[in-house]
Length: 476
Ligand SMILES: Nc1ncnc2c1ncn2[C@@H]1O[C@H](COP(=O)(O)OP(=O)(O)O)[C@@H](O)[C@H]1O
Ligand SMILES: [Mg+2]
Image (cartoon, rainbow, N blue to C red; front, side):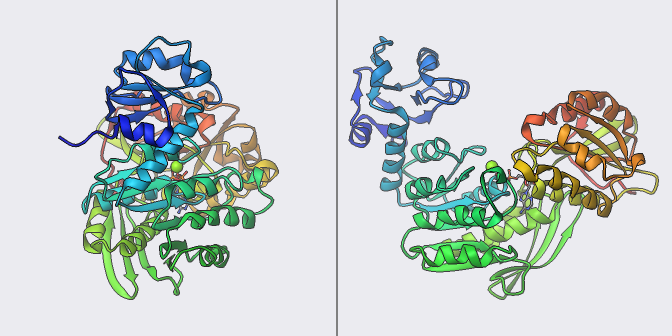
């Protein structure tokens, strides 16, 4: 049997906690009773809405090995499995640092405006074939997500892959200091969360913070196609990094895509890794996914992994939920294509998604339908950034648009009237008409900020038409 994730002694050494007599050891770590597994150490973290202390009894009921609670609240519980600390989040950070300290794993940290989770999952897929790989769950990339992921890292890990996110300057600094990556990646710099930044230069600087935590002699992986490449590189050179590897389509990129072919359900990439040719298939359609794969090659190269195996692994890459997942909607003997991008949206990912819809080959009478919800958190630039989507609608031959949300008015006003089937305030109001508009052979893509609940439209389409898993060409 593997040794436990955390022994009693290790927890005490890391946190200085007072531990109840009922606690023995932990086999996992959790902050959420809905996903807690028996044996997990439960951290009663205080969030924006809930205080985890309210769920301590539920956690113990579900088989938590112990509950980390604050001194202040401990008296409220009678269990002998309490682990009492001054501050629960601090204790989780301390355990995270202890996990980092005890491991011999090669550690990767990923940030960027878009593509963090997709790149992290591609990295997990690639590295797990070459050693025990531990990676962040979902988008656990913030002040609790990063320490939680660290504290979950098994002692036998060979590769650790961490997503690191931010909404404000200086948020990445403490997280990268905790993760101490051997390789740190910045995927892209784009207008995301810009309401808190005066310009994209500020975003480039904030993302550049990731290099401050890099291990001496480590590697910085940077997007060569970005207008902010030099700025990011300057941050890397000012850090302890010993090396910068660039990726992109730019001729100067160390890991360079020479050709990207996007098919209905996959992409083919012809690339060069420091001049050496490599060709591979990615099981997910999209130029942006192909570009992200270059950063995976760069990282794996820096880690000394077998790049042939890495390239082979890309064939099995599937889009994370709501980020480009394709399904066929059954319409009698025929079918239509649904591209589910409902997880979230910002100008960069919206453009990428519209380009993906544009790349779907249709028979002549078929139509491309975009169902779009507001992109949030763009501050005063929001209206203009919505308006600008009109060009992408045009260049990607989108025939019909359904729109939800007040900001979408800016786009709707720029589009030919005949193109806009319906503009409503909420996604729920679009459901019936979207379902009614689909015909055999059509392709429909659904995308918007998470709070716009565009997933309602996806769910309705799947329920109405029944969905089959694999997407294939519509033409034929
Ligand atoms: N390099 C990229 N350029 C533009 N859009 C991208 C890129 N990589 C991913 N996306 C899109 O951005 C959205 C968010 O992707 P995700 O991997 O979840 O990013 P993050 O974790 O940074 O939010 C998805 O719709 C995805 O298809
Ligand atoms: Mg993410």
